[in-house]
Structure formats: structure tokens, C-alpha cells
Image (cartoon, rainbow, N blue to C red):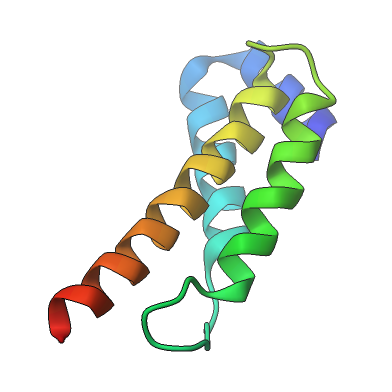
Length: 89
């Protein structure tokens, strides 16, 4: 995946955005299940795995940026799932 992102970025920022967007959707989509008021296990795993991979690439590289965006998305989902459940009660 890293090579694809690097090549897409070399073509143009629009090409990188398109490729990263499609990959991001593929990674983050799907059904989630869990305990009300707690983060989805899938989000926790995605955050942790993406953080590990992001750290294995130099900051600012296309691959690092992509995996860091997955970290941020997972963190947002974790926050949303816990906040919405707390507000519902």
C-alpha cells in the first residue's frame, strides 16, 4: 500500500487524495459491534495498528500521512461512540 501512496503522491496531490480516500474507506468501513458506552474493539485495534505502521515511516511522507489519518479517524470514532452513548443516558 505504501508504494501505491508514494506513486500517487508523485503524480499529484489530487491523485494522492483520491487513492488515499478510497483506501481509507476500504479500511474504515464495515459493521462494528461492542458494548454500549465503550469504544468499538475494531476502532481500538485500527488505531493501534495504524499508529504502529505510521511510526515506521518518516513523518511527512505520503504513507505516514495516510496511516496517521487512519489513527485520527479511529480516535474520532472512539470519541464519538463513547460520547454519544454517554449523552443517550
